Image 1 (cartoon, rainbow, N blue to C red):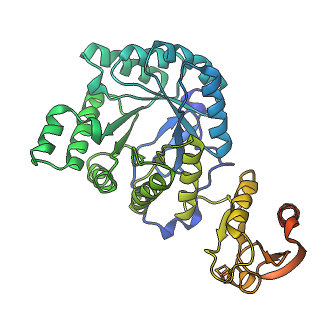
Image 2 (spheres, protein in one colour):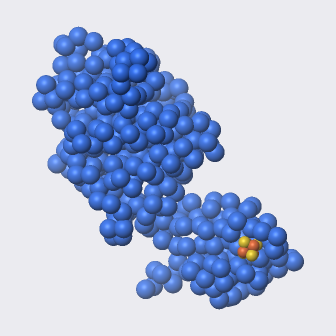
Length: 382
Ligand code: SF4
């Protein structure tokens, strides 16, 4: 796709929230494009993830990208550690429904091969490529093809002089990360290349937040935000929600990745729900579920998971409640478009707090599907 054909990120899947005025304004930035997806300068905050298959295995990688796409991922990154992976890229790019970013360390030949394969973006740190002619070759090719480069600074792999200064207490980890990023930025700017985005990731939430806040005042490149090596699904979700959540409130996120030791589609689900929770997305269902208490009369936790699964294919702003008891549930969730609760073998469906249907408890999910279809049909007619 030529640059002039590119538009802001697909409007049927991403929606700028008119309530953004509730959030602090986003930091003004330049804008870059990964394929059709705009990043920065007020574009909707996009969700990205990374495949966990061997990139050389085209079928497995493509299958995982399709799973990510179905989960709502908008940009996918693949690791390119060797020539076999680099040669697989052309077919992966051809079959991918998402813009593909090649993640490369050190080897400029892999970067050139990736560019030749049609990737939408590179993640490579120019200071790690080697001699100036190698850097120039990659940057010139990326510029000609309109492919942006992400500078990805990781606290765990800072340049030795910087990490030694951190160890001696002469600078903080966040300051060192920013210094590293600025060094890479200067290399690209010296070659008149400004199609840049930047990430500054640590596994430590506070260092991550500090680093982005520091760099925000030093450049106008858009930020790819995440907390790296965040942990397992529970721990990683909490750390990502804390770190990304703070930076969303700061207006510093342009694209996000939640990093989890788990299936990549979980990263996407968490990221999307985080954006919803922060009012950064509209047009998606929201499920509220009561925490349950001693009055519970139905397995609300299992029902809530089933309802979330049913709603994965729905892209409408619907508020759904799953409540643990019939006595308090409809009233406590009176703002929900549809709610379910029950107990004692009975199931109840309600809309805006009013009971609209009763059924056997065993049929409650089937009844919910029917009520959901009816609500969507009503909206279509409006
Ligand atoms: S809806 Fe019922 S079970 Fe759930 S928290 Fe409220 S009172 Fe408890």
